[in-house]
Picture 1: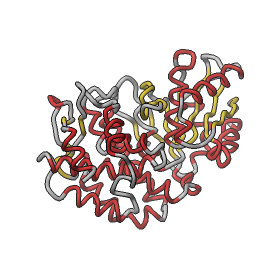
Picture 2: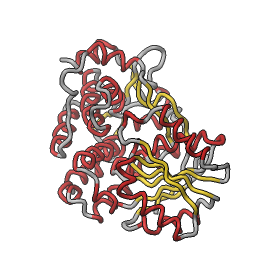
Picture 3: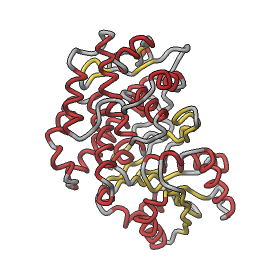
Length: 362
């Protein structure tokens, strides 16, 4: 069990194989409410919706399952509205809670439903992908995508509980699993070089989905993210270090119509943002090459998708929510394990459009 540092409110992150079967008793103890609305996508619901409903029922809890079509392209205001209307039709009141059962898309969308329903009801995160387990389920960010870009409408809404069962990863496709590793490597790249190297050394066990290795991986990533979020819950400063690789990644996702997985975009984004850092003298020479070597070894892409139009890509960058004063700002690392910057700089660096173009479209 990990506990997030004190911010507006602390909460437990419980990690262990087989926890889904015990979910009802754990949720009843931590988040006691009258009814529970389980929000999931169609793919995850097929695997685990019935099991979670049964676990809640065994604990004497009443629940209903609300599904939406799987895919990042369904993380929209329209689907948020449909889910909210579904809860209203089913008579869910302020004495209800939302349970997010799924990956990052489900967590973001269900979290936003919980943040806005009846002006806010509790949410419990039950992540089913590696990326969600070690990153997106922790920290309280929720939201939806718009045609202009990713996560541009949302809210901060901390969960009451995060329940992580690594055994659920057995049904996750290999591409989805590998994509989740990108965020683990990011945590190492910004905060812990020993963890970064451990990931590479333990890659065979991780890819084999050994429970002990997965539990250790999730626990360390959660510790890193919880420490960062605890210092800056609403991303006014220090929390921005978690954006390493994401400025480029979000632009790629937008212009590709979410044709790539988030973790794949982040992997390429880290390498390219390290190259940007090297170009402006902030990042130690050779860092981008080392990242590229390690991420390629894990089976992750390290370049932008082919065929992306430079002007359209730069326009997507211009809509990034991290942009300030009309200029793009990037989270950069000094070297693997250490972020470059300071509180006075807001932990980000202004980079000219000319430099960005030269690095990304050389």
